[in-house]
Image (cartoon, rainbow over all chains, first blue to last red; front, side, top):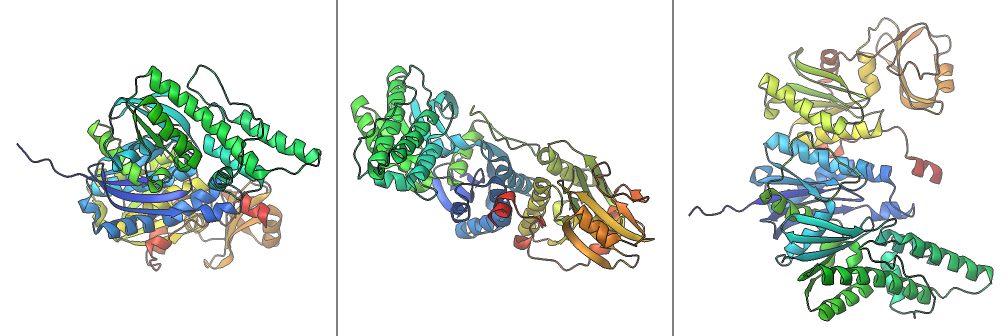
Length: 337
Length: 208
């Protein structure tokens, strides 16, 4: 039997405010990763400014690629394929990674593998341990809130998603109401660990679907803060953080629980930046015990946007026969298929 | 052999030039699909001529001003190319390219409309001296600078220009002329090749 050759994939990710490149071996072993984050730049504007993000991606792209190859002690000739996030995300940002990936694919005649950003978040888990099916992925980040069922590698079925704001976006906005600096999500989580659940807030989209909705909850917090101010009462920030976070996490958990039971899930993974949230992690662990299924939450470095997960997903996408030519385009609202 | 790339307008202008001769050139208008079109078109030039990417000794890329997204696409292709294959690279402005493609019989004023009463413009005299460097200025300021001068406008935004003149010509790049003029311009580090937007983002502008 012919020995199976190792496959080294160069992943490139630029869908929001991180320019990242990574080399992953056989979809599971991280060789090198470089992430150039723009958080400090966008902080001054209270959120990511798309045009500024695009400008920084183009500035950073070749330095990030060079550093990634240098760390791996490899050259482009050692790379077997190039995996690229084609969407969803900020279109101007996505385009920089895409053009870089296509240029390298053209110059070195390497296969070009299109990777959906959410597939990347899911496959971040395969860098820790192999995925098992049927699997349920709860993807929670600044741009996404989705429940995805997988019956096998690269067989995605979206069960539900947010109808309005993404969970991370909602966290950042509520954090701003409380007076926390962008990105406020993690700071809000810290306060929530201290306070008590004293403020009454509506449970979002408490229905029979797998969907989420966070804009109503966000508005409720804004109104509550406003009313307290009108009445001359001081807002208890810790308690508001706890009250908000409890309700938001409960919404995620109840829909996840429903999917686990109805879809006979054996393996639950949580992916995306909000997977760092302490309350969510705690409740997910509890849910795993309650439903008696295995739970995987990847380490923080794989939860935020990075190219490692794109290279990992790219390996399985390649095995699934997914390849693109040089006409591949970015799209801000790609559907995971 | 020199590769020329200009994606700063709603046209893709690219070509491969060797010893003052155009081996292959492409001038193509596109809609909102530059990222879909640019690299396949560039690749087709190589395919059609049998030239390989490693045969290129220098890249000349337009770094603006013009469409922000457009410039970034051309710059990204060019800098990744130059960095990865260690090819010399140099940048020129779209306005220099426009002026170079027009006869030096008069003062030349390449203009790109930038909306809201602004434009990107430069002024070059018959001897190719730069009287106004590529600038983001109001039409009023530009008119002031052109007062008492006899000049011609080079522009593809003729229906949007807020300046009138009896000599206006459309921009049709002479890729050989452009490459010949700038082929000896010193090369720069590919990492440092970036768009020159001539304009801050609106977010930065409103913060000032």
